[in-house]
Image 1 (cartoon, one colour):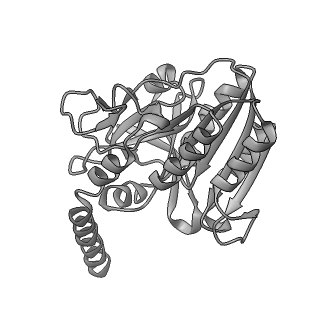
Image 2 (cartoon, rainbow, N blue to C red; image 1 turned 90 degrees about the vertical axis):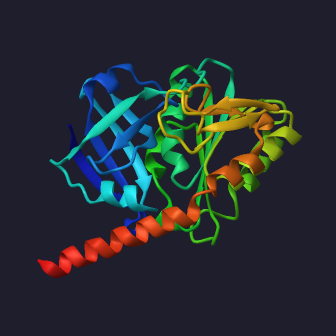
Length: 284
């Protein structure tokens, strides 16, 4: 069992941040890696990338949006309670080294995945320019944490309620145009349409781009083949070959199709879970 050391609610209650006591995972984890969690004996296994790692405290921090049965089950656990299983660290860590100027672009909860990566590039001696966005200001997360590790932080919202009115790609294009040939790398993490668009923009300027793929996953060791993705025409497994890949070589259409394969079943499972919770509340 893995104790929840702290719990925080963000983004109008839809995003949860849990710090979990997992000393063996924290001792080995590196930016870009993930864990697989199981809330209880009846819960399914889900992959979540670590938003922070604290080896001295022996903890990892996960951030997730409540979108289905399993995330709702995790969100029901409070500080002092425990997650049944935490498996990790899994996946290949980000290739962090000194390259020059790195543009880190995050959308929605992808900002949480981006944070330790951007911090790693900063610590490696790079100039980090960060661009983060959300649909509206209440849904924007980790602004101050990203500001603390960035030479320049740019913020946008889809509805114009805060920062630039528009998309992260607007700011990415403007930044690349300003830098000229000065950008060495773009790291883009968020929803699939956002990552695809960022790769298109970075490609127009000849800048390499990393993306982190949230493929469907079961075992996390490359044995089941569930998390296969197409990269440069070859089949890769997100759990062992990734989760980060060259964004210019990813088949985003195939990824999007696979992610939508169980959407109806997921919605039904979540609906039944909420009905069960309502019955439990009514019976108390």
